[in-house]
Length: 124
Image (tube, rainbow, N blue to C red):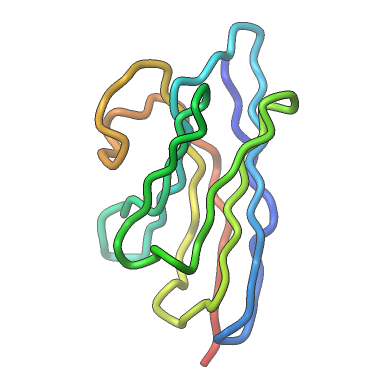
C-alpha cells in the first residue's frame, strides 16, 4: 500500500511563495515519476509539474514554467513544489501523485497513487 501525504498549502498574497511537500510511504514503494496536479472546482485536474525519480528530469506546465520548481529527496521519499510569484489563478487544491512505470507524465490517468490534496489560495 502506497500512501502520499501532502503538506504546505495555505493562503498567500499574489507575488508570494509557498513550498509544498509530499511524503511517500509504502513497503515496496519505488516510484518512476512523481508529479503535482491541481484542481479548481468545476474544472478537470490539471498537470503542474513532474520529476523522474532516478534522473531528476523535470517537466512543467507552460502556465507555471519559470515560477514553480519541483525537486525530490530520494532518501526521504519526498517530493517538493516550490511555488514563486504566485498568481490568483494558481488558487486550487494541489495533489501529489506517483507512478511506477514510464508513461506520459502529464496525463493524470497514468498515476495510480494520489495524495489527499492541499489547498493553495492566492489573494489579489
